[in-house]
Image (cartoon, rainbow, N blue to C red; front, side):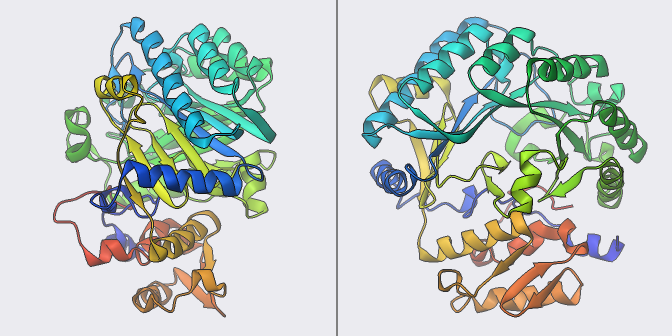
Length: 454
């Protein structure tokens, strides 16, 4: 890959799990009532045809992984489990009262934190409580994030019996020195045990999350991790770029210095090398930073151009409405976003007052909706078109000007009324999406808000 292009485009930029991105939400005009109205509209429009997605954030971890950018609370006190589950079920009851009719659940995902911090019994109470007032859509998909060190057979069997068929395990890297640097020590044997258990029980999709660009990580480390990964052949792989954002996540990402991180060029080479090894093993690149076997639902969604992206990342199940439950969770009605409070104490207090615990959000205007669709098309399909009146560029002339520069660099091409990202351009998809981001262009941040794109 051209070193000059890496130097030119290695800038801070969003990962576009939403548009507008969170730092550019219009907080002044947002209200809880406005959010409720937007969700009810989406529910009425789509519940019968698509159903809705549920994301449940389970924030507790027993130790701090210094690579992590998620919202979490570190504790070894497992008595926190029961009160938290009761609170999540209370929040769900408030949404049920708002929606006034039985929701059809298409997708449900347990994220964290560490969902397997919770006992199998408590997870059973949680999921059973969520489902008792709901229906299941045809082809529904339930998934959870498991920690290889503490995911037990009881976890896997209990969730399988509740309808879960997909699990992802955080691997990161198998080099012990790197694991110690990021405070995530887990031997290959633990990952193998958790992977084999899931398959023996009947899970149809097992995923591994691997990170490149970690402190002290080399290209050789990436190859060794992928070699061990191929011995297990997970159905899908998330091959993430480490996001070094200590100005957001605090001292947790200060267990090493910037000097310990790979250079932008070597970091990009880690990805390209990893991609070559994955593709040689039969994996197909999906969107940004993901790979899947052709038998996996993520590949099938890409092949049929039904791949979707939201705050849960890439998903094979598109729903217009996604409700996030738990502290810091973000909900999406397509017309609006809403984020829950980040403090457990405040979360509990608001629920005791029968208040949906949202503290900020954004209601999308017409321009937002147009740009959002273009960015979603690019992130999922590496192309977008403005033939459809609802996606018109007539009001976005500055976007076309910026895209011409990417064309000159060989990163995209114009075809009739369509923009198609080239093979070389896929590495710069975040930068290409930034050309559409009028909010970012109108108000450049005075301080760094996002991780680097390379």
